[in-house]
Amino acid sequence: MPQQLNRFSILGGSPISGGHSQPEAPITRITIADIARQAGVSTSAVSYALNDRPGVSAQTRERVLAIAREMGWAPSSAARSLSGARTETIGLVLARDPSTLGVESFYMQFIAGVESELVKRSYALLLQVVPDLEAELRTYRAWQASSRVDGVITTDVRVDDPRVALLSQPGAIPAVVVGDPGLAGGLTNVWTDDASAIREVVRYLYAQGHRRIARVAGTEEFGHTHIRDAAFEDETRALGIEGEIGRTDYSTDQGASATRRLLLERRRPTAIVYDNDIMALAGLGVANEIGIPVPSHLSVLAWDDSPLCVAAYPRLSAMSHDVTSFGAHVARRLFDVLDGAAPGSFLDSTPTLLPRGTTAPV
Image (cartoon, rainbow, N blue to C red; front, side, top):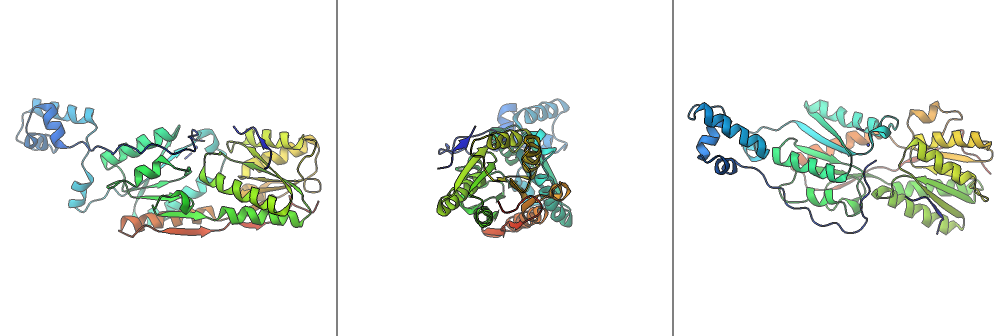
């Protein structure tokens, strides 16, 4: 097994246990009958007050409206569907540290792709950045109770993710999961084949003579991190070479710190694969700081292949996939769900290797 280092929109959500989560309590919708009981009036009086129709006194109207606000009431999706109306809004909640969103381009490209499909249907994107997974769950429940959005896009899926359980309940908000089929719990999902991509990286570096390869990985709780970890460990073991994983939160600082620890080891790696672009850029800086030439003494390879990879010097080798197109694909599948399509699993792409100026034979 590889020795692991320091394991521990807009986004670095709170870790959750990899164990089985307790099922989420069903979402309770506030009805006009609930408001009527609280206000001590008839449901007809509540309906008149909420719809600003004659039939109740000004005092009663104000009391009903105040109670409705306190209880978090909003028109039900059933009522909206009877009139054929939708909110024409899609929701995306990102449970990550806002400071990482300012420098990592993945979500900006992904959102741009989503928006490119929404604009075709005159839909809006409701983006909410929250501190952790529990806050994201609360947001889903609030949106469900108020019929705030027509559907949601769920990202950064965990193993046994409580959001998947919540969105799988009868009557839940329509959703598309961005992640592997094994993580989606039967919901429609769109995914990239990260396992095959990691195996290709390891085999490529092996062919160039590298026998000590490290991976500077992202948050351990994310499902796609588990998938990449397992493929990396399996492939290095199959080839009989050394593999090591350094754990980070995707940030520049932790990417640099993990790289520094790796490069100061007695048997340092001759190649490092990073889980995003900004950590690879940070790794280039650390190699220069220590005095290890890239690529003659150290090969560096990034993930996602944003414009940062081409702007760097040397230009970063990367596992490339079209993130903007990925976001557009996810949005199209969500519209399919809204239009009544059966749940399905859709492979978007397998990231492909683009060798540039930071990889070379040992």
